Length: 293
Image (cartoon, rainbow, N blue to C red; front, side):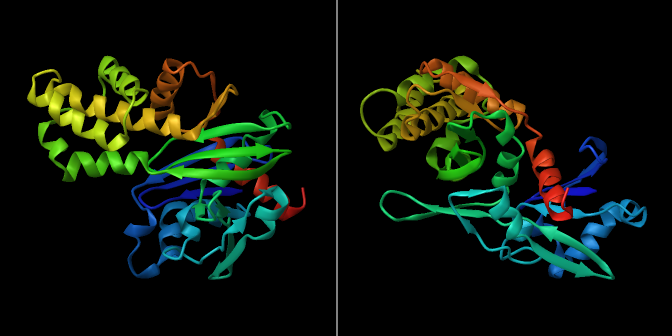
């Protein structure tokens, strides 16, 4: 089969055998925003034409390829939702006698009735459900829009999104804070200091201005400012998520998950890292459901 993780900025393809093992993989900077004129079939074939011609099937896709800006919109499935609901809402696409299937996203509402959505993360979660306690677990998927997801009885029950990564990028590129920063957010000690600051009194907005003020008073080196800001934002995210005494399961790239793991341990929170390539297994599980295996 062919598994496709197709996001806003990137395209990742995997050729899998009958057991779900990866035989080959490819990636390209060919996210949906880089596909001109909605020519998604042509874009797909430009990357995996040889696999298709070799008879690999089914072709299963997830991510922003199923959004309104993608190939075809796969509507959001409301939570709680498990494998059957997600697989049952997959959308078929056809081209040149070929066909593929696109996974839907999920939706939920918070305690005040405000909607929240995810698209792509649900496939990652499907890939790790078997390794989580059936009684319930809390998963954090760090990223541009971090997700905190409650699962129980092999279903996604509820989730909340935090725009931590995007806010960091906006502040760095388009705010007065960015003018005092140099280098990447790689200073672990100043990251720790930011996490600690987020645990202190006052609000996020006040803590953000403190990044500038500490710089003005020579208390924060330019090369450490990005790390300090990152720590503040992630620290506030952790406080907002209210994970309690349960362990947090981290699901994401090893590098980013490592920073979250560091922050969680700093606030006394146990955490467990999951397979960062879980999306591939999730797509394999969806493919098996489509083929009745």
